[in-house]
Image (cartoon, rainbow, N blue to C red):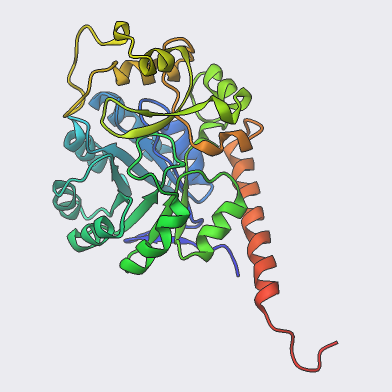
Length: 331
């Protein structure tokens, strides 16, 4: 069995790998382009960018690659629709929506003839997304970073969702190597989304402090928090997170730009994520998938892809060899 391609609507990626669209300047054009050039789907995270910055990044990326480019956007963001329209005008190939559910996105993307992919955590929501016109769904479990829609692992959610829909199902959350990819393909996934693995790449433009923190942290340094967005998330236990968990009101925002439709205002999540991106350990919020401890080095995207695909192919061939019966009379 060879590593399959990934088809989402009319968009076909040579490799079944989507780079997670990590928000607030983590998944930028530099990272998305290198992933697209390797045959995956490179994704720019829209949330936290001004419309001018998003337009510039989409335009730069489109000029640098003929590969597949995606937009990731949080439905919970107030400028959700505006971000989608900016990306569509800049000829994005795929739109990925999560952190909420919007019917409007199906109408908008249908008008622009662009496939839309919905983040889901249940068969019920996956069926609804398919009925409304989703070209694919991404199943994300509790081992992802960012904002989570389930307390179950992706591997537990995946079988029922694959059975529930006829569109491609992509697995996400806590995957870092080719064996992970191969196992999800065996279970019926059409592809896999990886976030933290690509955050820890040379081409990801977050501050070196962010990458060093993940490389040097232990599994016990990870905690589950409830984000001001209203969804759980996995984050490194930094001074900001300790203050939040202790109920320290000194971190509550003194003003608010209303970047979210609804916000708990325990702290300004936009500022905290921007500070993490810029390497501020004391005041930053560092989201990460749980398997960061299995990534030992920051490497170029090209090498990451090469290793992922070789590991996936090796695993699939081993499984195929075990499943292929020996011909009668063979030595």
